[in-house]
Amino acid sequence: MSTDTLEELRVQIDAIDAQILDLFAKRTSLAAQIGVYKREHNLSIPDPSRERQKIEMAEASVPEYLKPSTVSLMHVLMDAAKSRQSHLS
Image (cartoon, rainbow, N blue to C red):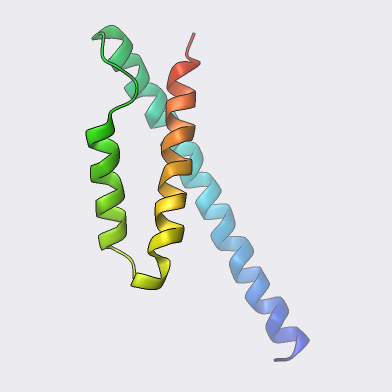
């Protein structure tokens, strides 16, 4: 692999990372809106049934070798959402 090829691959990863971060910000904003709804309707922030459903859906959408990392990623995303919901003013 040449240095140019490595650099080109890194540029592509950088672009994907930027998209991921943009989507993460959008997801967190939606989670905040859900948090407001939950607060207004006296609902608990954690929703274990929904969390299980999201993990199962994520696992079903990736190859076997990605499943452990996908589960970890989903936990990070859901933990960030719950944290955002907990800290609404």
